[in-house]
Amino acid sequence: MGNSENNDRDKIAERLKNARILSGLSQENAAKLMNLPRPAISEIESGKRKVSAEEIIMFSKVYKVDVSWLLLKDEENVETAEIRIAARELSKMKQEDRKKLLDILKILPK
Image (cartoon, rainbow, N blue to C red; front, side):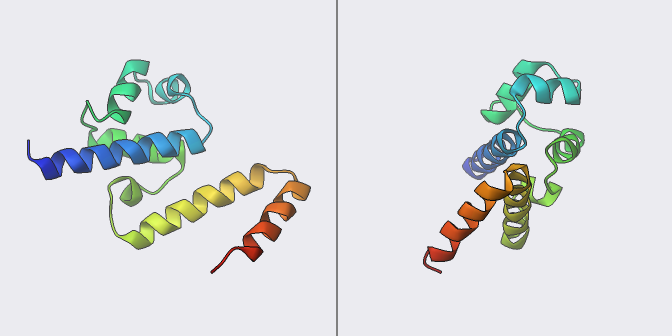
């Protein structure tokens, strides 16, 4: 296996792990939702196990992220997925906390 293939697998593994964490699921919860053994999730997230196309689609649905983002497609999709994840997290916050965070964001350099 080439170095580039290893690098891509590691990047996909990292995105899957981040998407799972941001969706608020443990490895065990994700495994149950996908009907996989929990160690499979761990192996996928560590880059030790390849992910099938069907699994990528399932991860996309369970984690509510775009398939193309998981598959390292163009940067626009990466940005869109990150914004979608951020919006989902914001929606979970109390209105008062969300306002404080938005006030902080306004003072950050653009």
